[in-house]
Length: 198
Image (cartoon, rainbow, N blue to C red; front, side, top):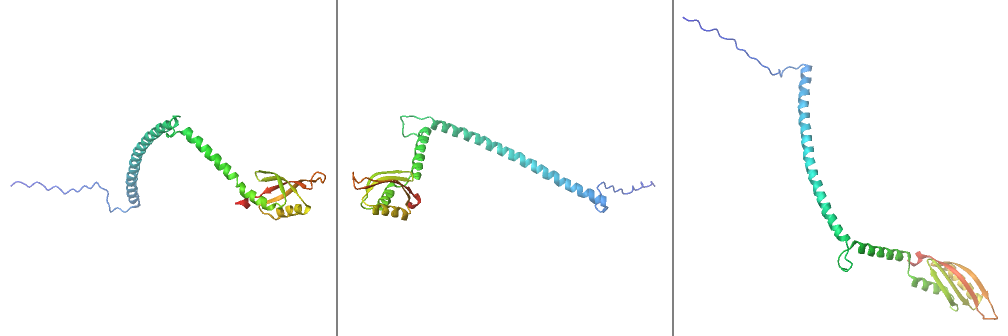
């Protein structure tokens, strides 16, 4: 009878590292490989995101260039002005009007209502005073007039001293010539307090 072939021994070859190995070196290598895999994946995600962001920004840049070109063409149309067409917008005409508005606003802010100043000024003068000349320039008032008596002069000085709107009365000239006329001639200046009229 023929002999049976000898049974080959069971071979079990395992090339994978042993998970059960708990040596310090084995654990360190396993940790480094795991972290390395995650780092590579994270780097690839960043690179892909950067690439997609670059495409998006490039498209935005091209759109912005197109928009700027169209706006420039509109501006060039507005810069050229048809002098006969008053209804069409024109940059030169607009700038001219803007300068005029700024000039008016500047004059208005530096100027206050003269009628209020005159009303206040006339209330400070004695009733018998004859006004011959009045000049209002900026915040200064200069005037000339005739008074009958020295008491009216004292009244004039007191009224300007008590006023909070027109003050600092300075009498420049004071004269009286009885042979020509009985009046006391006065020339003076005063200061307008602008805040008092606001």
